[in-house]
Image 1 (cartoon, rainbow, N blue to C red):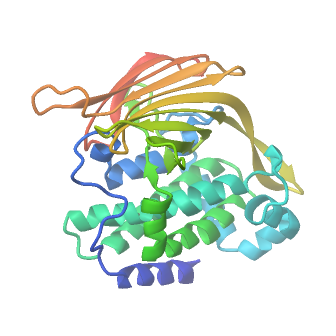
Image 2 (image 1 turned 180 degrees about the horizontal axis):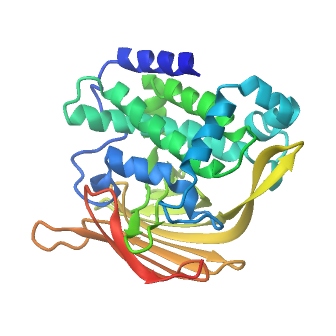
Image 3 (image 1 turned 135 degrees about the vertical axis):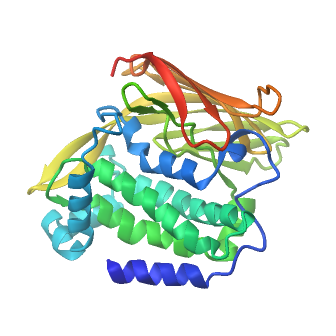
Length: 358
């Protein structure tokens, strides 16, 4: 593990600073582009797992020490722990899928989130550091992305002690490959021009009275023009949501998208010969999105029928009070109770209050 980290740091240090920005757009001063920075990324990426039902959202109640110890026990002895889990199980569930069964779908976030999404965020963060004048932007991005990725694995592990192959797949296979792939200009061009993907992550808010962190999570969007149908694109939105639909773009740069699909509303712990793996609880979901020049301005996501819930995000740049442009969050239903929060651009965490149900 130490050798891998050293090689990745050395590799990132050898990459020249960006001469062209593919995923970071500093000229856009509104929406999801305005609020992006490394601290915002760390909160959204590191604490993403807390929005799955069943997790305690109080960031001060997490079993960090046990999680760190167990994650490192697994990633420093990957072959031994994979053998306990079973190589066929590991390959089928985590790496080379043979089934689209929900119970064997651990590979889906590995490819969509860790490899493609994580690779894009690695470059996007490096471009942010370069814009701020950092001498080694890719090295800074490596440490930033590695920190949020391992934080997410620690929180997902929680207090469990034993074989857990998920961080092995994420930290030793998909995250490094994502960084490597997105180090090539051809890959950057493909995912920024041919099949463009966007960072539409959320606006984290915390209640200082109970330590609950709400609305933290990485979300991505993809648009692909529909042939021969001007102004319309196929649209995909993913993170804990997996939604697909249509996007319509106006001449002024504003786009409106609608999508249907599924949401992971809870993770269930399972054991194979004392080796742990997680399976998702799935619910229906639909989403409505408004973006301007591919910077998300507002969204409404509704889930059900197992858990009826709705979440609204209004990003900075819509409402302005002098130089002050806040963002807003509202969640309500069986999952959230009623929550309302506010955020400030460039500040990674806003404030929230409300009545809780879960």
